[in-house]
Image (cartoon, rainbow, N blue to C red; front, top):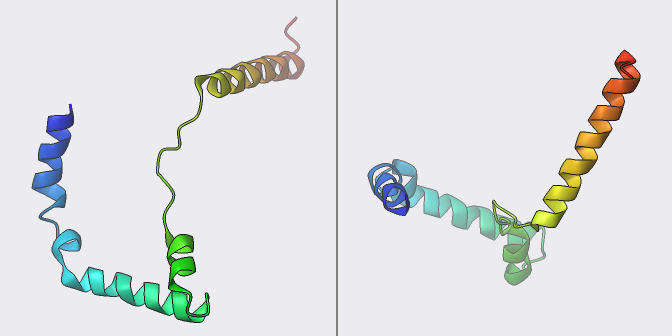
Length: 87
C-alpha cells in the first residue's frame, strides 16, 4: 500500500505546478512576512507558531470512540422510540 502511495505522489504531486512553482513559495513567504509584521508586531517566531497547520489526523483513543458510539447509538434508539412510539 505504501509503495502505491509513493508512486502516486511521484506521478501526480511532485510534478504538479503548485509543487514545483517558485511563485507559490514566494507567496507563502509574503504571507508569513505580512502576518508577522501586521498581526504579531514583527515577532516572527510567534507568527510561525500561529500559522502552523495542525495535523490532519488527530489520534484519539479507542475508548473515546467506543463511548461516543455507544452514546450516539443509545440516543438515536431512544429518539426513534419516542418519535414513532415503538415499544
